[in-house]
Amino acid sequence: MTDIWRQLEQNHAETADRAILNLFDEDNRIGDFSAETDDILLDVSKTNIDRDALALLVDLAGASGLAEKRDAMFAGEPINSTENRAVLHTALRSQDTTPLIVDGEDVRPGIADTLRRMAAFATGIRAGDITGATGAPFTDVVNIGIGGSDLGPAMATLALVPYHDGPRCHFVSNVDGAHIADTLKTLDPATTLIVIASKTFTTIETMTNAATAIDWLREGVGENTGAHLAAVSTAMDKTAAMGIAPERVFGFADWVGGRYSLWGPVGLPIMLAVGPDDFRAFLSGAHAMDRHFRTAGLARNLPVLMGLVGVWHRNICGHATRAVLPYDQRLSRLPAYLQQLDMESNGKGVSISGRALGHKTGPVVWGEPGTNGQHAFYQLLHQGTEVVPAEFLIAADGHEPHLQAHHDLLKANCLAQSEALMVGRSFDAAMEIAATLGYDGEDQRIQAAHRTFPGNRPSITLAYPKLTPFVLGQIIALYEHRVFVEGVIWGINSFDQWGVELGKELASALLPVVQGADPGTRDASTRQLIKKLSARQGN
Ligand code: F6P
Image (cartoon, rainbow, N blue to C red; front, side):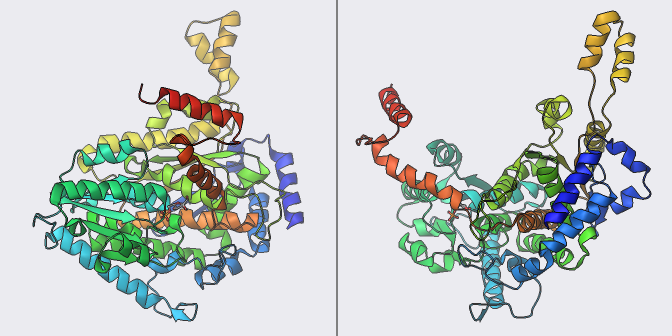
């Protein structure tokens, strides 16, 4: 592998100043730098990766044991080594019937049974057959969860708004009381179902919000709060302790990571909103991407290609961030969702064997939907001193045929941005523009300098027909596998998250201090902040 890395670096050193645009002189760049499923086109041609570099990147994937590691994941081997767990979120959406054995047991019947129970519950709620304590049907659902127990269902529920025909779904995650207060004040407890989603059922934010919601229910409907509660967790003992009836608890196993969990019970709000059939279509889309990931050759494999482009930008070009820019308003939570998926998975500094890494890992992932971002931070993308690889997403069709003019503008803007990033505008062209605006001499030069675009800024584009449940499933699974591909090449465990622990421990220790206990030997800055916050409390 070292030799491949070296050759990639050499390729980059020799070609860093080359114009991406010139690469289109090569034969069939479009064909060779794109990959497709029936629905999704991934175009990576607007990057400074040439044929030689692409071949080396594919060799890198091969040399990292990607195919073997991918197969080990799908087979249920305990590839999450620090937690000694299998990684089987793919099983939640699988249509395979061959037994899948984990710890001596076939997990497929349990998955199917939970999905059936979820569907029966969702159908009962949606039809008004399952009602609240007063007999009124549920009009609203509040999902209480955080991280993977919030971002996935919140993102997907918003993405699928055109398919909603169930109760309205709301999401409360933050322990900031403002979040639950602002949400509940618009709702009627008699017609509200609270879903408490927590893999561990210990997360302090979720437990605090759940207790507040239960108090709110009690005030509104009396003691029969159980009629308004459901839970999603791997910890059935803890859900019982909260008084949630077992038939309203939807469990999953610890081989489903929190940030990979929306395909199972954590997806209950999605199912309540769109119904079991559309939820199954969402799973089928993801399963189709799983099949593609398992069977397509490395150079034609969407997650592999996307991962290799990520590695090229991060390790060979040294770009520290990447921007996710969905030209799809209903994907406005996708960047936040991908921040957890990507940064919690690949924000690691040691190898699987616990050695400090000699190379960079996960970039900072950020973004906003287009066209909004264009009027905010794209200035930096086009003319800033930091190069940010951009990832565009665009549908051929929206769900509003009567607003075709909007969608045409959306598409034109998306394509214009990737073109502008790549092509830029030369100083000479800017000088001509300045001249037509009436500038000459030094003024013309100054105006031209400000209106010059360096160009040669890389982007990739994902194009899909329409944001249906099936297509959404494919897109999310594509990103999941891309994170896996990058994690394998970086030699890290993408499935643990020890980096979130220290802050949690310190917060528990600081709680009594912010409530008045002695700060002890804490650092001076923290002591000052506690003192000043206490002084301002109640003012
Ligand atoms: O703190 C990080 C984390 O553990 C995430 O990995 C997880 O998605 C989130 O907290 C919520 O955890 P839980 O579902 O157990 O409440």
